[in-house]
Amino acid sequence: MFYAVRTRLTLWYAGVLALSLLAFAFLIYYAAAGIFYERQDESLRSTAQTVASAYAEEFEEAQSVSKAGQVVLAELVFPNRYVQVTDTSGRPIATSRNLSGAPIPIPPAALTQAQKNSFSLVTVNGLRVAVVPLSADRELGYAGVAEPLSVIEVGLSRLRWDFFAGVPLILLFASVGGYFLARKSLLPITSMNIQTKRISVESLSSRLDVANPRDELGCLAVTINDLLSRLEGSFKLQQQFIADASHELRTPLAVLRGETEVAITRPRTIDEYQESLSLIKDEAERLSRIVEDLFILARRPLDAPVVLVKEPVSLNDAVRDCARAAQVLAMRKGVRLEAKNETEPIVLNGDEELIKRMILNLLDNAVKYTPQHGEICVALARQNGNAEILVRDTGIGIPESAQQQVFDRFYRVDKTRSRAFGGAGLGLSIVAWIVQAHGGSINIESAPERGSIFTVVLPLTSHQ
Image (cartoon, rainbow, N blue to C red; front, side, top):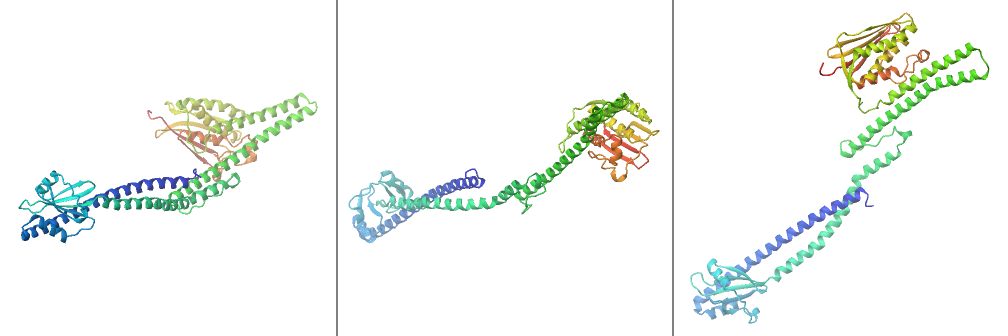
C-alpha cells in the first residue's frame, strides 16, 4: 500500500499540511497571547486612572486621604480585580474588600516609574498591576489595580485546546480529501497501465486512450502512442527483413542441397561432376554475398544516428581501385567500363571500407543489369564544395514508379530477372545507408531500356 503513488502523495500532502497548520497555530497562539496581555494592561491602566480620578474628586471634598479612599472603594466595585490606594511611599491607605487584608506589595521602582511616566505596569505574585498617581500636580499617593494572570491563562488554555482538537480534525479531513483527489488524478495513469499491459506483439496496433491531449497525462499518453507507432513500424520492418532474408537464403541453400544429393546418388562423368561443382560454387558465392550484405546491414541502426570511425579517404584512389576490380566483371560479361577520375586530389573524411563498398555495389549493380556490348562509366568530380560520384550505364533501366523503392531491403523491380542475375536486393540498400551515414545524398535518373545514372553527392572536409 505504501508503494502506491497516491498513498505517498497523500502522506507528503498530509505532512506538509501538518507543518503548515502547526506553524499557523503557533503564530495565532502567540499573536493572541500578545493581544490578550496588551488588552489586560490597557484595561488595568484605564481602571486605575478611573480610581485615581474619583479619588482626587473625593479628596477635594473631604480633604482626608483615608476617608476619600474609603468612599471611592465603596462606590467603585470591579469584579475579579483588586484595588489599592497607597501613599507616596507605597503603604496601603485603602484596599478593596476582595483583598482580605492582604495588600499588594508594589515595588518602589514601579512607583517611581508611575510618577515619571504617569503610569507603570508590574507583575507581583501572579498579579498584573497597573499603578497611576492620584494627582498629577500633587503627591497624594498612588492607585493600583491588579488582576490575576490566570485570567489570561484560562483564555489561552481554551485556545490551546481548540487547536489541539481542530488541527488533527482538519488534518484528517484534508488527508482523506487529498487521498481521493490523488486517486482521481491518477486514475488516467492506472487506465494507461492496464491498457499498456494488454498490448503485446500481436496487438501493437492498439493505442492508449487520450482524454485531454493538452494536460501532462494527455501528453504522456500521446508520447506513448508515438512510441508504440515507432515500435510497430520497427517490428514490421524486422519481420519483413527476417522473412526476406530467410527467403533469399532458402533458395541457394536448397540448390546446394539438391545438387549435392543428385551428385552423390549415382556415379557420374567428370564433366557432370564439374558442372555440379560449378553450380555449387556459384550458389555458394551468391550465399556468401548475401551473408556479407546482411552483416553490413546489421551495422545499420533503425533510428539512432550512425557513428563511424572516420579518417581521411582519397576518393581518387577509391574510385580507381573499385573501377579496376569491377573491370574484371565487366570484361567477363562483355561490357565496356570507363573510369573518369579527377586529376585534383579529393579527400573525404569518412570510412574507407564503406565508401569502397558503396562504389563497388553501384558498379556491380550496373554490370548485372547492362547487357552485352553495353557501356558503363564511373566519374569523380568536385561540385560546389562536394564530391560527386557518378555511375552511368546503358542497361535495362528502372521504371519511375520503382526508383524510390530500389533502396529498400530486398526490393527488386523484376524478381525473376533479378534472381537470374544473382541479385538479392541488398546492394542499393547498403549504398543508400553508406551515403546517409556520411551525410550525403543519392539521386537516380533512369528509364526502361535507356539505362540509369546514379549520382552520389558527399560533403568534403572543411579544410578543402
